[in-house]
Amino acid sequence: MSYYFGYFFSDIGQATALITVSLIWASFYVIGAAFGPRLGFSESNHLVGWTFVSFLFLFGGVFLKLPFTIIAIMAGCITLLGLVQLRHKNISIFPLSAGRILALGLPFFVLVSGMRGSQWDEFTDWLLIPRYLIEVDSFPSKDVPFLNAHLTGYPYSWHFVTYIASRLAGELIESAGPLSNVILLFSFSALVGRVILTGAKHYPVRKKLSWALTATVMLAVTLLNPTFAQKVVLTSYADTSSAIATGTAMILAWFLLEALINRDFDRAKSLALTLGFVLALLVNLKQATLSLVVIIILATIFISIRSPQIPIGRIARILPAVIIPALTMFLAWRYHLTTELSLREMSIRPIEAWSFEFIPQILSRMLLVLSKKGVYLVIVLILIGFGLRGLWRAESPFDRLAALAALIVVGYNGFLLFAYVTTFSQFDALRAASFWRYNMHLGPIVVIFMAYGCSLIWRGKELNTPRFRRAFWIPIVLILAAPFVFAHKLRFDLAPMVVHYRNVSAAVANLVEPADRIFNADPRGSGESSAVLKFALGDRATYAGHVSAFSPKRLHALQKIINKPEITAILLYSTHSGFEDALGTALPRDKSHFLRRDGQSWKIIKSWKKPQKDK
Image 1 (tube, rainbow, N blue to C red):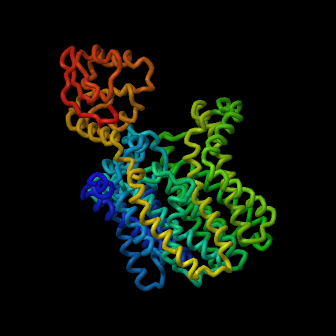
Image 2 (cartoon, helix red, strand yellow):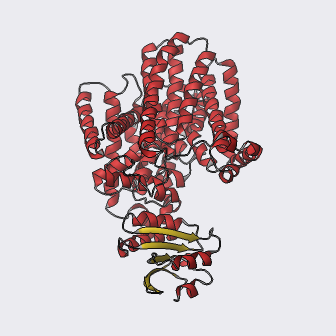
Image 3 (cartoon, rainbow, N blue to C red):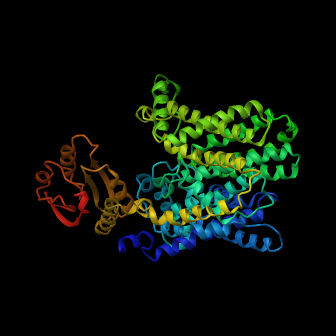
């Protein structure tokens, strides 16, 4: 029972994480409401505010060379100024259903607030880069290149969230990413609710979602979302934020088209600017999201041309508001990359190195990956079918929504094929590396398509009858119970071996000296222990490489290392035939060992018992 209790409550640091992350997102909502477009959506205020803060960090950090701490203080002052300004305006800061979302999502928030890093990429990028930002208080540069991180040329808007939370807390908040992902998903559920009420023609008469509908849309973006994967959502990865920005941008583009058709040009201008801000955020989340920005803009233009009700002159006049914010954000970051980082990101290979001959195999692999995600694939095929019809007819709001969704889904997967051919290594291209993870960026689009389709079925039907009222409690119970029922699956960071890696690496980081060069030996492991050790070490000692189950000639690799006098320490998580003889000491297999060089021999300094099932 105490172990189960530990899923939800581990230490006082959870309260710190909840408070700091909540303050950040409340601040984003305030900034978006106070300084964003006048007729925008309250459901997108936080993304608009986040964009403002991203511009502040980007221009302040790149062109003015201001310390990030100063920029964060400036963001706080802007928040206070926004609060003062909003006192005299009748503007909603939060969605009207925010209180209900908060109440129903509280168990999720408490559960996730205790999350710690557990995934390989977190230790090499998504947690490591924010820690660098805290240490140096600036972007990476020629002088401070963040050497231990991999793709430091990726955009930084997502890192700003963890940085600000950690700066407020005075230490790295590892749960800032997972908490923010859950906040983003549940905030997006309010937008899903707006779409449903719009389709059912209950909006704006019923602006506030009922408890049952609130719970339903929260389930739609989490447990019922065909692209929901806890080992992506509940981590510091930027994929969930990219997905939410993509879904929000599509909804804004759709409402923009409808406003133009209805000749509501003032609202169309506000929606265009809101869309521009969200696209600016999207382009600064991941390298691949540039393609999504371009696809969304082109899809919006194409559908406006296909819709005879939309004056071409009007769409031409509002396009700058859509394009300029994203273009400005993109060019500012490219300037920093070219002047300071030598483009430390994935890049297109010379055309003679493109994998044209492997296109059939790559396509086959992409289809195989999708075939294993049956529900998602079926919905996408239905979506594309309605999208083709919508492109042909372009008569109803549903036609335009389906066409937008289909163009984005097909366009993005076409871009991924292009990336595999032109950018990825042959090995990664032939296995369509991370293809499913990239398709998670399209998850909110699929959710919106399903939600609007269901709303059309709901239209004209009276659900507030005794028969239906008896079922209203079901989604409420499900969303409240889900964190308790699935706690063991959601808290994957508490897997015994992950905890062992974290604890041992942290202990070793306190045992080493600055002059040490430490080698990680885990011949029965995947190599993740090495990423954890490297993260834990920081600059306390020099990481000198590793051997894992994927290393050829593991014994030979170890012998080669121990013959180098500059290697002073070894962390051994598992052993292999011949390791004991090579190190000249007994190595009990039920323990991990920290060894230090003692002349020509090796001495065990400390050992840690392994989790029982991982011996």
